Image (cartoon, rainbow over all chains, first blue to last red; front, side, top):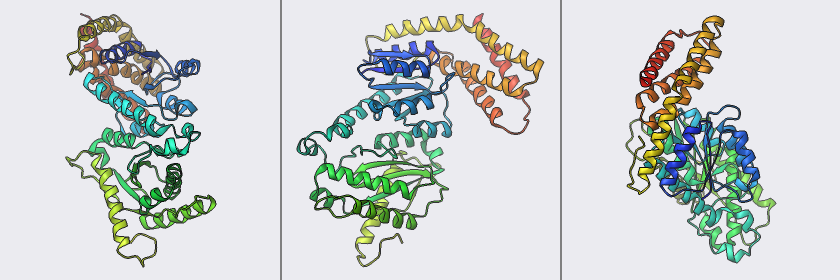
Length: 320
Length: 117
């Protein structure tokens, strides 16, 4: 794995590189500023596999650098880990909004680094499995389609509003239950996802999920949120607890938007996806649950809402 | 020192690296002290609080990120508190009293000087 460390404190770079080497990551380059990092990235014939960025640097800071790296086509999905002393929620939010996949707090700890690099490996593996969709579209449907399973939290094409599920999990883990108290998770369940998966080609299924993501994004417009696809037709988002989010209104809006998107596109043998939104899930201030529990609680609520709606087939679309 | 959960063959090499960086960190300590003293001196002559807070925050940030990894936990924690406080002063729209922060900076400088002895 080729890694680029960016930090304006050279002694920290040396220490970090040595620690990484001790756990088997030896192909490491470094830059002491955002500007130098971009120049180095541009000069590479083989792209880096992972970036480890300090947030606070002279000149271009790590948040801006993260955005610039994400804007490069070859690095849309490359794992980026922010490495910083800044632990406030505003910094964590800024980093994930800029496209970071994880957030590591200084001082560095070998056990922690090992765990985070494990996450990076998992992201790279996920990207290999399904993430390079744009490139794979040129492959035959058969060769790629066979690899997409219904339950996979696949990367969706052209959906900047969607982060990988692993990144959303990292986000809530970095916040912890105490800071997560000011957030809520909302689940979205595509009630006929299995039917669509069975009827369509796998690439169409992924494209339809991307349409669902776009419609959810429109329904959440005006809110500060992180959205991820969790597989099996489930989406989950995290947003501030005090958001001006009206579940019923959002559900009508997104299904209406989705129907219009689907009308404008020709998917053979396909029914339009229908989405149910679950009741928002919140975390107790002193909860002992793993913070990621909140995400799955929200997805469970969306599935429950779908089951309830299915038991009342005459009911019009819209949350109770 | 670095937390170490894996008994790899390279741990001896890491310890040597840490020791080398630790020595370099101590060698540069005087420059770091002078950085803070220059910032305080300029503040006394100009009264520019924003400039002072920016410089204190930056200097403390450099220490907070590195010192604990080199075994200077107390120094790193104090620097971290100072960085956060300086950032809070920078964002505050009211003219909060800076004396408590300056006292904390004095304590940090004392701690840094003791490490030089």
